[in-house]
Image (tube, rainbow, N blue to C red; front, side, top):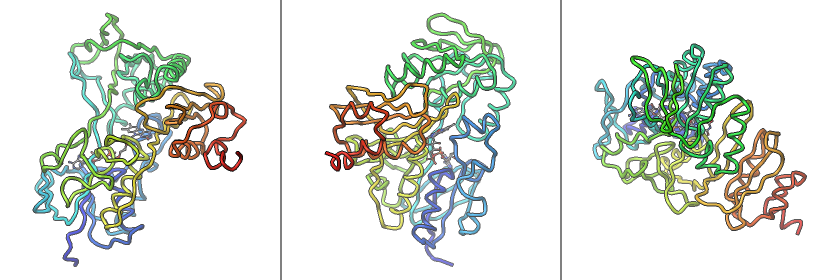
Length: 415
Ligand SMILES: Cc1cc2nc3c(=O)[nH]c(=O)nc-3n(C[C@H](O)[C@H](O)[C@H](O)COP(=O)(O)OP(=O)(O)OC[C@H]3O[C@@H](n4cnc5c(N)ncnc54)[C@H](O)[C@@H]3O)c2cc1C
């Protein structure tokens, strides 16, 4: 038996499983690996929880991050169903609820995030739900089928997907958000407005520029009262008002926490024995002035893999442009970028038709792009944004110019 206590990964989800996989398969790390998770399930992927899994079109097995036998085959110890409750970084030990302890040489914290809770009168009534994990999705799948009037609070990515799922199941569906359009912070007025139209075309009652005053009911929810005084009947309320990182364990262990566990460019935290990655990490990304915390599937995969490299002493540069995908009302949209500002938006194609693409520009440089039903395009868009070169607006708008021809090296070849 090895004297090295090895690596403990706290958080048995996408980031954690990807890190374990990369340690064994990419780096040939042969020390002990322990994957600690508070959920009872093998590591699974969350995107389908608000889409196919909710609607019954994605099978449970399709959620698996890795084949179930991978862990045994690769001698990875799974400690599932109990949270890590205490982390002593100097002693290099972690304790789980129930008292089990593991020693480690290095620890990777990949504890993800959880839904932000509503603090409003009526927020604790039966029928007020959140969605983060597999059990939530299974509960909602049943509740959505039993419901008639569904109110979704929040028109972000999750609220938008849930509205689409609720309409697919035939429910009267209202979405309430104080901002002027769905996904306003990400897409802005113009493109957010197109998404508002798409929701309305699919029968969603969008109440924008309004907020929730209270949720009404005795034991279970009956209605939602808005700030402008509307009363919307509801037998199910789903809250999608953002997520907060699960930083408590790290904070109690003395790590620097500030809007996420702060890490350097290689995911190292303020203690030499600890890394953090995925949704919980606020990473010093070389492409951005301020450290960023990104809640995207793609980021979890990249972070998990990169954390493994740092753990074996071969740190890589993590400079990916963030990428997010979503499915709403039968269309798949992909978004690349994380801009804080832009001064112009260029579109190509007709919104609502496959291949529609929008580019956000800052002083002539594409800083973000969105494309719809256009699989394969995101890689080109990512290259375009990464290049950070000025682009010709007429070429961006012209659907006859293939996306690869917009890339800077293509332009210099033809100019
Ligand atoms: C419903 C839903 C739909 C989504 N859809 C998309 C999408 O379409 N596209 C996209 O790009 N992204 C999507 N995402 C985001 C994406 O799933 C996340 O970015 C990704 O799951 C992050 O992975 P993670 O492993 O870092 O964190 P998580 O997936 O949050 O996993 C962290 C794990 O750690 C566990 N944990 C927390 N504290 C402890 C503790 N003390 N001890 C042990 N375990 C602990 C948690 O319970 C959890 O199992 C979606 C997320 C949700 C919730």
